[in-house]
Image (cartoon, rainbow, N blue to C red; front, side):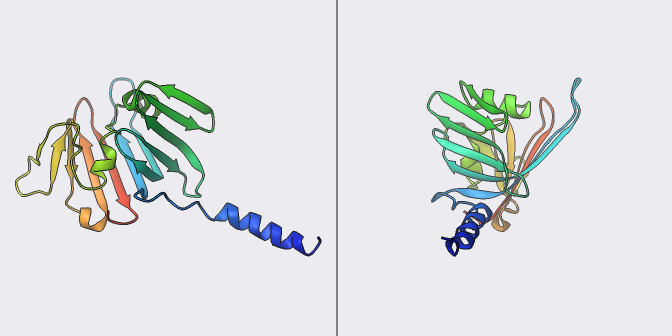
Length: 174
């Protein structure tokens, strides 16, 4: 039994150090969200690692610290969205309500799985980028810039009601 103790301790430590494998089709990388100051709110900047699996109807977005600690996880299914943080779990009617509670802004979380794959979300109308010849599109009041998508980078920005920029750097190009 004493000889097994160091092995068990090593396995336990290795289990803590190695994150679980991402589900097939999951996207991962780093996200940065910048919200401009408005009214009585100051500007906000949020950066985190992310893992996104699923689609607009069913999925999970997990945000992590640089050390791999889960900061928050959003999970959604038909008719319900849940936000799990170290402070507990909250339930919402939809992803828009969840994003307002989590980020203070309505973010297009339903469209995010498609946008991170470099394509418009089929659930809303879209049009080509307003900048002639620029790769990307406009959807839901956001401009999706795909100029660096081949290098695994995406920028989604919204000018109104106040400026919001979401930058993603993907671990691999989908």
